[in-house]
Length: 74
View 1 (tube, rainbow, N blue to C red):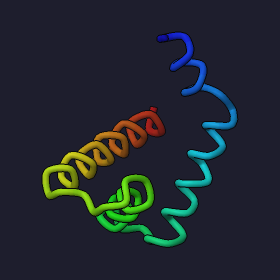
View 2 (view 1 turned 90 degrees about the vertical axis):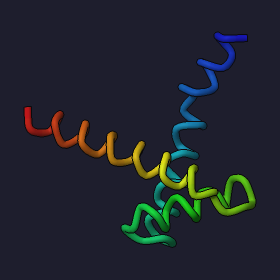
View 3 (view 1 turned 180 degrees about the horizontal axis):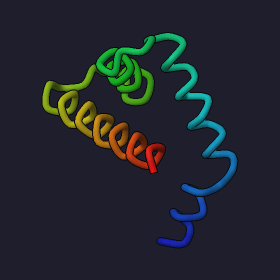
């Protein structure tokens, strides 16, 4: 049910767990986006990302980074 999915995505518990995961990625994988993506796949899916998944994930991170930079500049 759509409202249930939206509730879970925006629930404080889910946001807190996402923050803990991000902190862990930075702590264990360091600043390298490739290493962060590899670790995240291993932790969440129990396997390394394929080359296509790795490219897609790093492209996604690059877009988010450029959008954040634009927002800060305004």
